Length: 214
Ligand code: AMP
Image (tube, rainbow, N blue to C red):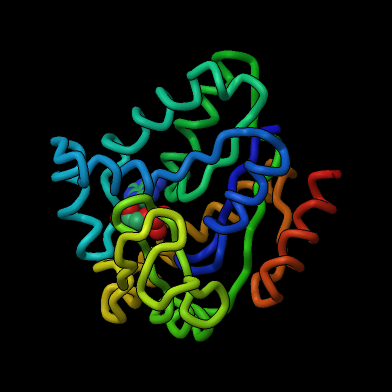
């Protein structure tokens, strides 16, 4: 089962992608996580990506596509995967389709987690992330057990630089301009499904499971 999660930054697609990966035993591939891991490890890719991420801009397709194609070619992706944060542009979607068609495969589902812009800005200001292990929380909907401390690894949780309000506005503008056209792209392929992301997290997941089958 090969799944793409679509949706604005902060729509909750990362949380849903992790739940899908757990339930269906497929890898969760988040390009944002890959860039952040590279940044933490001080790689050249991480340094380059940071320049764009900190401004709320997309990392260039050339840097992004190769790393995703490498990742989906690995053994654990044989039975499928869930892509979170990729593709984010039409050229990325076309590169993905071309890579899969070379091996006679195609994506099965694109799931758009739909949340209006006004909800996004509020949500993102409450988001907290652990820069050590990548776990994400929300001060209201998914709080840490101890305030400010990651449940998983005990390190501090923080408001990520790219979740600061000005950067969020920029990321939303970039989303509408460059990523939203993917909704029509996948509608055209007949694989688009939309779920309302304003419901509680468990209900969003239930709606997704109904699409994917138990
Ligand atoms: P995310 O955690 O998915 O919100 O991604 C954080 C940031 O990483 C984005 O704002 C972009 O700067 C960068 N990024 C993640 N995925 C992509 C992608 N597919 N294409 C370009 N930039 C990306």
